[in-house]
Image 1 (cartoon, rainbow, N blue to C red):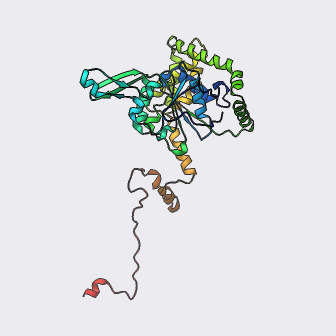
Image 2: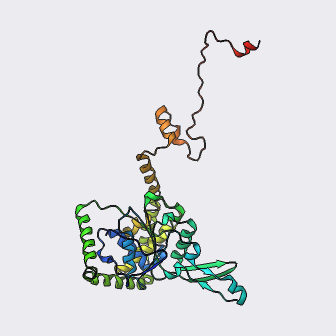
Image 3: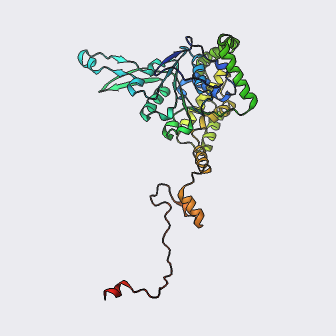
Length: 362
């Protein structure tokens, strides 16, 4: 479904009850995104969902629609200009020194508890803010420390970060900490494109009637997410599941073990959502792409190849191909002398009628 507006105002808490949104069940052509969001809703400890894609590909629409399915039914928007105190909250140190009590002013992480924290253009946020929200998303707890005084509170929310790759990438250390990632593309299939536009028009003309048509499916999502959350502790993994997870992560050449842990949790969430009796290898296969998309080493090489195809070839590559040398392929990009060619001996040819400089001095 195409997105047509922004999510709330600066630092706002948008209630889906006060402002009916496009139904989650009515999203068209976004099966992979819907699955990733549902898994994060079932197990917020996955670490959230990073959505990459061009403008107008339903990123904010899907985030708002998911919030409606959660207990609190609210969506909190983190603006680009937010400070760290605005995000995590503040402690009044003067009150602590005066009477020993802790006075805490909650931030957006507290307001997002049991809801959705939506971060548009997360790749443009300062690293400190991204670190703080990813820590809270993974642990479900936010801790504020000031001058030796600390305060903690529950902060279990579904983190949804969006980014347009044309505006820059996230650092690898940060992107790896998002549990799942989905890459959206523009719709170039005529039937899909027409269906999206028709649904949007129908919703704009009669929001109440459009939502009523999907009320049963929406209620089913709410009930299944609630039941899946309760079923998570009852599901375990056999050796075949562990073996498949390890094989997929090794093949993707991922760093560390975060991918293994996230894949197991995502597969368990999917099994719980489908009311399965156990987590199977098939569940693992169906969540693997979202877990590995931003972690596999090939992801970086694909971007490098794309940049070269767009004409951003490195100077040393051009020099090497023009001169017939192959040294550029073995030269490190970090070498300050990249592209340097060693001097070659040249034959000296004497020129008649030229007086040597030392002869003039004599």
